[in-house]
Amino acid sequence: MSLFRISLLAILVVGGTGCDGYSKVSGVVVDGDGVPVVEAHVKVALEGYRVGIGVTTDSAGAFHERGCHEGTRHGVFDLVVEKTGYRTDRRRLPVSDANENLRIVLEREPMPLPPQTP
Image 1 (spheres, helix red, strand yellow):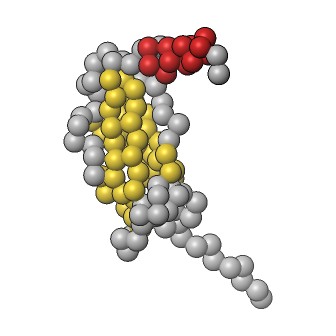
Image 2: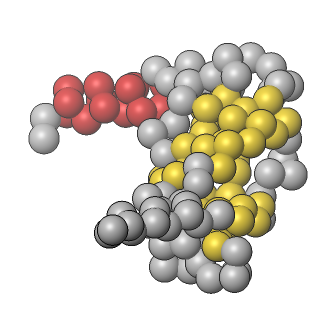
Image 3: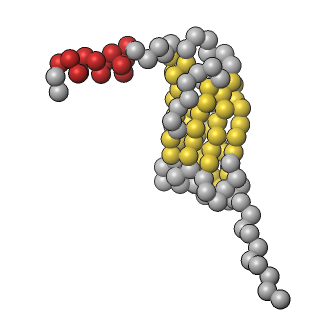
């Protein structure tokens, strides 16, 4: 890789972000029985901030996400957790350093009833 490309990449990654800092959110996603929900998609949308692409929970149901914030750290963010077969969990949380070690319980979608035969 040329020196120019390395320099450009460093500017884009470090200097060109426009971020004043990062807010973190982490925790675990479980079902109603306390069993970890693996590969649930967790997205963070910060009010007035950039939207992260999201992360996927690991084998223990854990996730760690951080979002770039510009200007004030006051406000709220939306946390959206989705997994096929479960109801989507949406919650609005205040932007703070206390949004780590969250426990999110996903409810299973009800199973459709089989068609009745006469």
